[in-house]
Length: 318
Image (tube, rainbow, N blue to C red; front, top):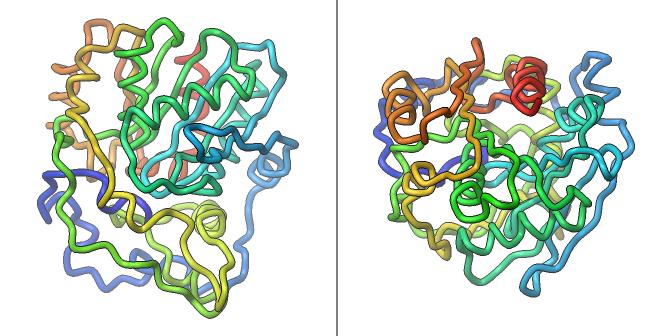
């Protein structure tokens, strides 16, 4: 449910699952569960149970949440989530990277997850948050970064503006060429609805852009990590006013100007990154950029093909 509003210039045909769909499996994938947790495979249960650090670092007066796995001193990897998501969306990916010999961290951008909110947001602030989280988590003087969806924008900016700090940048299903400097078109922001109980809130979760949920156990985990208890019930964690108060520049320039080694990964079923977008990204990205498509993955690659994504990341990080 948390990618709406992030990207400009999309037409209705860019979201074929949403157009006229009344399929509850798409519009309310968790509703039929009635709040129950779906059965999950052993690898997933083990991954989310792995011990990890959870702390905050102050960035310009706001507490920014970060999570960490693996031993300090090993090669560092910083994971950047998409719009409206949070660090916990990496909880079943990060431990498998740590097992491959990395010190892995994930942060929640300000205005999202368990991080504080700001009166104004900007990509430059997010870059400061990424560098502060990397420092707090002990990723070392130089580290790799992997950013999904909106998280690919600061990943590209880091590669262009802070290449001396990066080993490489991996961008996952970010639709460069569709992202401009203007704010996404949307109506006036409103406070989040408060649902009377967790079951009601989970029943309202859906992906945006709308897509299937091939792994309901992941959909359920992500939905739960995206909610918080408040007076009167449950509501979404992310700041509903974030995009009214966000300043963004032309992200395509950062992609083209990347000075750190760059890789691009996309879901081959993603409605945001289709063949024409991949071709345009190939033109925009610096020479030597490696491009990897993951079959049977939609936009939320980590939710659709998590183990394939881990394998791709492990290979690219070598």
